[in-house]
Length: 437
Ligand SMILES: Cc1cc2nc3c(=O)[nH]c(=O)nc-3n(C[C@H](O)[C@H](O)[C@H](O)COP(=O)(O)O)c2cc1C
Ligand SMILES: [Fe+2]
Ligand SMILES: [Fe+2]
Image (tube, rainbow, N blue to C red; front, top):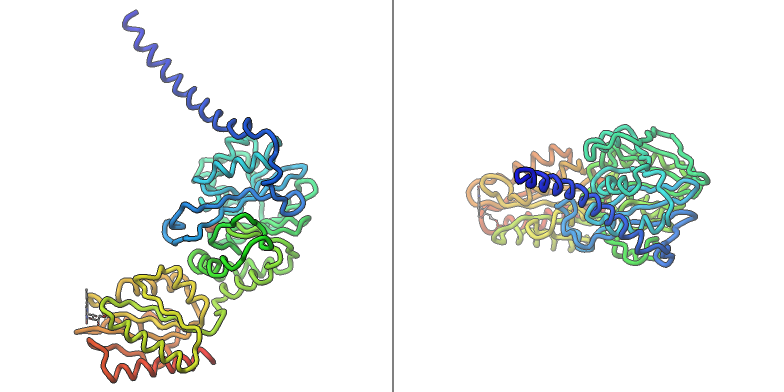
């Protein structure tokens, strides 16, 4: 008896523990259901017939992908169609799942979820798939072969799957979904879904932007100034490497009649579709938006910076209006990349540092190489104190990128003298002439 008691106690405790865990989860699930039985019509926005927004804003995260600053936040968009069948289009980053589930339950208003369409598996969208499955254990997940490989890899999910291929359709009742594969429009499993009844494109990351959507959801409800720079910065940082896949996707979708784009980040595009598609087309062809010159320089003690100022002054004197100087140690790379995508001219400058390029400059060049940036009117200059190494690194970089070099690059030994001052001005002049061609 004495010997058995502790055993029973442990047994019961273990059972209780499992039970407690289940109850806790069920309680968590019930929280929103019981509290909000009535549908909160005010907060539900019907974007188009039967189509609702259930995405969330993230103003807490400092760095997207733990790398790119998002001072204006980001939204993880998700949508529901309520038809004879119900469908959810992508989920949200897991840290925002509480608010997300609340919205989904509110929109479904007691109905079950029939389909979860997974256009993109990256965790900023796929992060809440497992939670959705817990709330709706019978939900059928719609994706392609690559989606399913990732579903298994991330969540161990292998059942209740419905595989779609290029051109397949799925009827929700009134709404007909059409699937188009868009591999490497960020990740290999990416697809986009077109609701031909509503003429709505669920475009995954494409046409997305940094910046939360505050209050409004549609482009017609928002002040779009906030997104002008942020959309380009999102493209340059996140999608910039995938110019060719974006081009392929744009060509594939060009015959499709689209009246609304539901991207996974930022505003829902309606009146601005042409402008936004035009920008993605331009960026993915590595074409500049405007004539202008970015000077990205590294400088520890001001010598290289002084040269950069001289070059910038010459650019101005010879008629360039859009000139942006970035100190690579201060400007985050995403802002520099964004300006490089925007303007046609690029000058990079670096001191020699331990027989190499200055680390910040090296890192920027590496990012340009990763993105296989094309069509730049390029030049460079540098400084050193005993043995110039920046020049030869720049020459190699230009060769690797297959970029032509404009003017006569130079490197000053120690402080800036008359000859190199003259060369800096000549370089500015040559660049000014080249960007205006
Ligand atoms: C940490 C450090 C490493 C350097 N390494 C080299 C080098 O390997 N070769 C060289 O010629 N100069 C080297 N220099 C000298 C700088 O390239 C030179 O002072 C340059 O003008 C600095 O430009 P800044 O004033 O724009 O920082 C080095 C300087 C520092 C501070
Ligand atoms: Fe993505
Ligand atoms: Fe994303």
